[in-house]
Length: 89
Image (tube, rainbow, N blue to C red):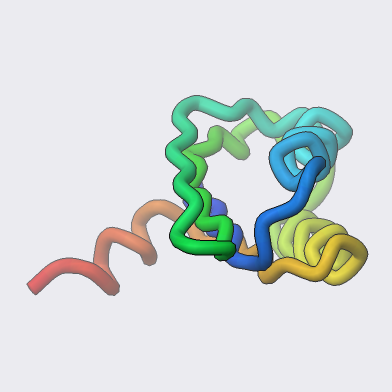
């Protein structure tokens, strides 16, 4: 099952490392990444495979959110099917 991770915050060293570290810790495979810096704002979207995650989806969401708070960014994960439904016109 795929999910979408979004990261928004002030640009600083280590954001990608923090997010990918949480993914690796819980066996979440990163399939695609796009990131950009808009002014001083860092924005990233990741497509990840959570099928083999070692924690439930809600726990993974909490771990990512906590990692975001540690580095001053907003990190969210959304199931791919929900993300697609929210953005379908």
